Length: 316
Image 1 (cartoon, rainbow, N blue to C red):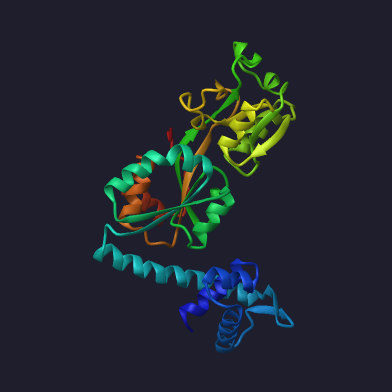
Image 2: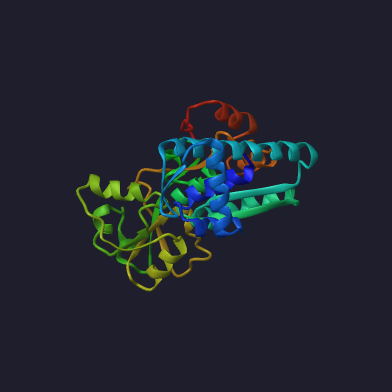
């Protein structure tokens, strides 16, 4: 049994049994992957995959257990390398952060600037995607940490570290009628076409819930995964925008006006997700503390050793 065989096995499962995609991801050939998986099955004396002809179509029940164990073995092998690097090159390495556009664009820049100043020899990689995608990148070992608002709590393989709470604003063109209101209401918002986040992104569920609680159906005409896209279409006059308050910058967004909407929606919590079974290098601990100062080394370590994910009393 070789680690290479386990990597081929896990990537094949990760690519929904598509050997071509697995081969492309691992920079090898489809026949090579097929041969190594077959050799592993012969060694174990069990079928990991069901086949229709030469095509893999399904994971067998014992194959599911084998894949879970293989993922854990690969992560442990990676942890061995990280432990060695920690003591031989503590300021060198790679930190892969999987996050959403809003975090990458509006929250992370000052943190990354501080981090790179302290650790100039650490290579930083940003992977953007939906909350589900970024969480999956961590569980698969392709990223060290996930930063998102939605979905992280659905992944039990991740330790969930609540970082901060935030709310929303409504963005409109200058001289929009909503700017004349003494107090913004959901009924007033719903008189206009709404442009906001795709359902899987950035606290969209809180928006839907607020309207539902008032017996209203939000008049959403356009959704996007990117705060800048939302603002662009508001500037074009296609509707009003509902977005994270951190995504509005009066200096940059001179063609728009923001109206606080925090009294209309429940606050959302941004979290960091890290794998329970990963070895966390010192500079990763430091990055997390830079991003969220209440998460010091001892607090994170206690979370890693606990099976509970608690909300902070004050994460603002």
